[in-house]
Structure formats: structure tokens, C-alpha cells
Image 1 (cartoon, rainbow, N blue to C red):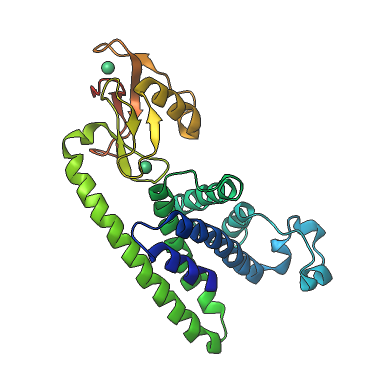
Image 2: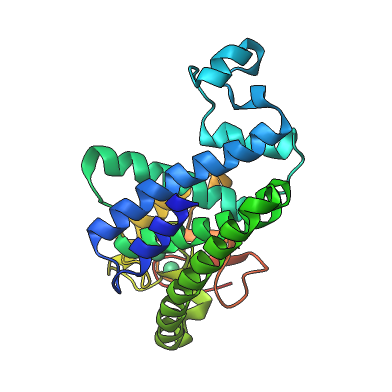
Length: 270
Ligand SMILES: [Zn+2]
Ligand SMILES: [Zn+2]
């Protein structure tokens, strides 16, 4: 819980959070996720926090002398063994955050601050609910009040972060009002912020400012980096003659529920 409180404080220390605040928020959030997920796993059975449960040893467990499982396998075990529902969006946010954490440790904060803030808020939100639903009911009465107080505090900070983000999203919605039919959801920050179809100009996310480069380059890296897009064909657009047309596959802000045809160069929509 202490990690969560530190995260909430770093994320709300200034607006926008400074790179230093974001760095500490990400490091503590990663630690919090690991500790809290494993605490729940341990309630299922102590051997489940071992990297390989088949080699689990009670004495080593009690001494804390063992290699424990990764956050990603803790998530899988919670879903498959403890039968806990964890939505895809939270899993994606936790995984993206682990990547930022590793990059951060080796290269410093290189991704957009807005993208990190947005993902961090998603993970914080998930963890607050997770503690409330999965850990609180198992705690002895004496500890419950303290944890509830901490959860309330973290929740209040999270609402502050959300209200900053909502203000930015509202402004963005106004800015992008006329291009919703060619606005994509950004993978970095998970917001509808990427406008394609502006010819030669470089594509970037209007929310987190991550740069994707010119349309055709952007489309190429978009297709190869997204698992769901493997095998998607890029055709020549009948309108602009650029090889930037994706048929029946793109989801846009205007109607996210259905896939449409879109030229990433000229923006015609079929
Ligand atoms: Zn973005
Ligand atoms: Zn076109």
C-alpha cells in the first residue's frame, strides 16, 4: 500500500508530472503491482509465487530465498488458477508499464510523458480495485481500517489525475471534431489521438505526442508492431495512388465498434 501512496503522490505532485516524478511513479507502480499480485497468489497457495511451483520448497519460501515468478506469469496464474477476472485492458497497461520500467532503468524516460502518465493512471486504477476486491476481504479486522484509509487517499489522488486528463481529452475532442472518421486509438497512451490521412505530413498522437512519421512509414510500423494486425494487406488507394489503403480493418473514433476501410495518406474512408 505504501508503494501505491507514493505513486499517487508522484503523479499529482505537479501538472504535468515532471520526468523525475514519472520515473519514480513507474518504478513504484511496478513494485506495487508485483507485491500485490503475488500477495493474492499466495492466498491461493504459497508455492504459486515460485518461478517454477514444481520446485517450491517451504523452508526457502519462509526464508524468502527463492526465485519468484514474473508479474506477467503472476497475472496468468491469477486468471487460470485463482479464477480471477482481469480485463485485457488492465493486462495491456501493466505489460506496457513493465516495458517502460525496463527502458527507464537502462535509458531513462524516453517515451512520451503523457503516454506514461496515462498508462500509470490505468494501472493505479486497476490496483486500487484489485486491493479492494481481492485482498481487503482476507485481511484481519485490525488492518482493514488502515488499508481502507490508504485506498481512499489513493482513490482521491487518482480522481485528481483523471480530472486533469479529462480536461485535456475535452480540449482534444474539440480539436479533432472534424476528423473523427480518420482518428485512430494510440497504442502508447490508449487515447483516440492519432489522426491519419493528412498527406505527407508526419503522423503523431495529439494526446501524448508520440511521433509515428509520414503516413506510409507509419502504416508499415503500425501493421508490423500490432499482433492483431499481422497479415493485414496494404493496398494502393484509388484516390491518391499511394500504397496506404487498408480495407475493412481500421477502427476509428467516429464508430469504434465497426471496422472500416481507410487510406492513411489521403484519409478517404470507405
Ligand atoms: Zn498517444
Ligand atoms: Zn488515398
